[in-house]
Image (cartoon, rainbow, N blue to C red; front, side):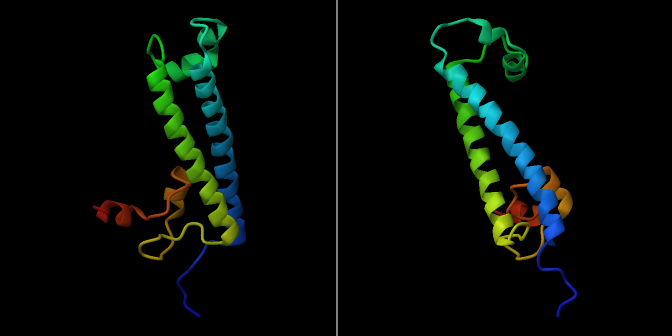
Length: 126
């Protein structure tokens, strides 16, 4: 048996699962907020002044429907990537670079838990 580790342990996978579930919960909440913004046809109402809406504004006076639509699409894509990462955890293939077959460093996975490539593989992709 090789000394080199081929997959993360069940304990390590559980740690990553918890990180992903937290990010997934936040991402879904933000997506719902963006959907509500898109569905707001009344114009300015109390939703525009709620603290959560202001967080999304990030200094802008208003969040245009076009911007909200783009953000919602990006958020949906992020949610899909996180859900796919959960499937890889269940299949015990999580954290394995799809290019090199080696383990992606834990540090990278903690920051980008849906990563499927090591930094080197990602940088060489052109």
